[in-house]
Image 1 (cartoon, protein in one colour):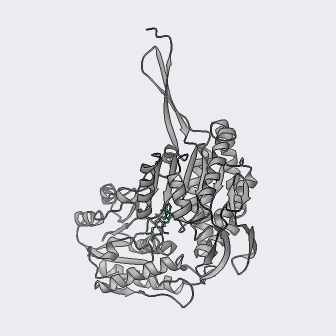
Image 2: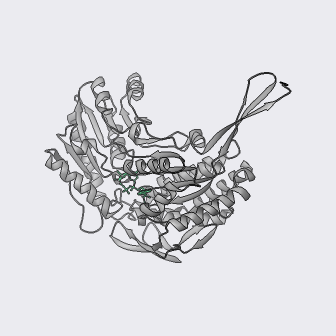
Image 3: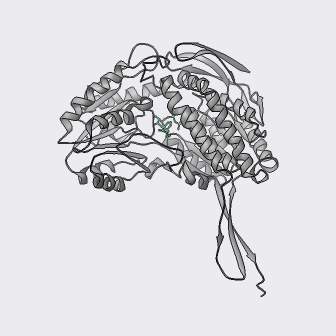
Amino acid sequence: MSTTIELNNTAYKGSISVKTNLFIDGKWVDPAKPDTIDVVNPATGKKIATVSVGDKADVNLAVKAAQKAYKTSWGLKTPGWTRGKLLLKLADLLERDQDQFAALESLNAGKPFHVAKAADVAGSIRCIRYFGGWADKIHGSTIETTEQRLAYTRHEPFGVVGQIIPWNFPLLMLSWKVGPALATGNCIVLKPSEMTPLSALKFCELVEEAGFPPGVVNIITGYGLTVGVAIAEHMEISKVAFTGSTLVGRKVLEASARTNLKVVTLELGGKSPSIIFDDCNLEQTIKWVLQAMYGNMGQSCVAGSRVFVQEGIYDEFIAKFTPAVKALSQATGDPFHPDTQHGPQASQVQFDRIMGYINAGKEAGATVHLGGDRHGTEGFFIQPTIFTDVTMDMKIVKEEIFGPVAAILKFKTEEEVIALANDTVYGLSAYVYSDNTARSHRVAHAIESGSVFVNLAQYTDAAVPFGGYKSSGIGREHGEYALETYTQVKGVHINLGMII
Ligand SMILES: NC(=O)C1=CN([C@@H]2O[C@H](COP(=O)(O)OP(=O)(O)OC[C@H]3O[C@@H](n4cnc5c(N)ncnc54)[C@H](O)[C@@H]3O)[C@@H](O)[C@H]2O)C=CC1
Ligand code: BAL
């Protein structure tokens, strides 16, 4: 099964073919129980394609294929340099086809094409290349015990790992998962979001072309309650990596406890603070705050959605931030138009959820300073929105909205803002804006979150660990830390002549 998508706009002209069934054991197969889902363009609300959806039986087949590959042609059977070579080839192929992938992300997830290309696709290439470089550098160490013994460690793969990813960065989240898992020698059964499967399916074609042995990468499109649950509960999957809501993250952890105690890493929600001190460079800060808040239409786990502004600069900040958000509003529209900076929300469900939060903010007595409504009449567009006159107990300040909705709060002192910023169940990211170096470090250290950006926004890098404190997650992606989460350590003890 396949579909051909024809595009004819300034950003992309041409056709893109996508195979639309399941990728198991290096083959394109139909699901055991025939079923499909329509994939929608969020800019229009119209269908783009129909893809297969799998079920538990397909997950079982994929796990079997992955186990076989692990024992025969991957894992400890394949030297790191071979795995690395294949990953580097995969990164090159992705780079070759970067426009196609950017077009698919734009069409299926509503991202402005130029952003999809510069951020999502470029970040994916960088991530796969980065982990390709690690594949032959994974090693244990020797440990001194006594003269009669030798002890050393091995960092061994888990075997088959399950990966469940969301719709906000379909290709990027796939790369964050696939890169370290393959570099460390694991085989994969991955489920993309049912809403945004196209780039993951296209990616499988590159996996084939790069020459990965069959069964090393298996991708099953489908729903969370069927394919996702089957992965989370599978007795032969030894590790699951999940990105998505805190609600489902808990279920994945519970499934592990109920079944085989598989290792679970979770990358979940956030309600990150942007902290703007009187002594910041305001022109620069406005740009970063805008990006941290409205980047990817606010559908980012690291969105800086609680904007704390120190009282001395509050009025000036509002006066300068407002026109910047208005300009973003005016650049809202067709994701393929070169001037577009802000696209639609990814789905009707997310649109409704965000509008629900906006209404809750209005009902709670917050002031809609800007936006607060849908944009246009077609698709799932929401105006970039600013709420002022908010209090810490309001739902729009406490809960992750995952949309273009900022809550702006005023603070007096450094001590006060640290307490306010930490007053959340989440701890994924934080942004600090100040030209006082000592203060920036002090606040960065005091904030309870896995990442802190100083005078910068949302710049994750494949080499730097990423993950959450508190309810934002368990484990780290990226960097050398990601290798740890995809390997288990074995201690080997050798007798060098000790006779009892
Ligand atoms: N940390 C992040 O990057 C993300 C956070 N979210 C948060 O979650 C909220 C809800 O978005 P959803 O799409 O509903 O997130 P979700 O957590 O339901 O979906 C994420 C992935 O989990 C799968 N899934 C759903 N239920 C499952 C289950 N019981 N077992 C295993 N897998 C399951 C989905 O099919 C999808 O592939 C968003 O508004 C946002 O607040 C959503 C997406 C990404
Ligand atoms: N989930 C990692 C990237 C992001 O949502 O911003």
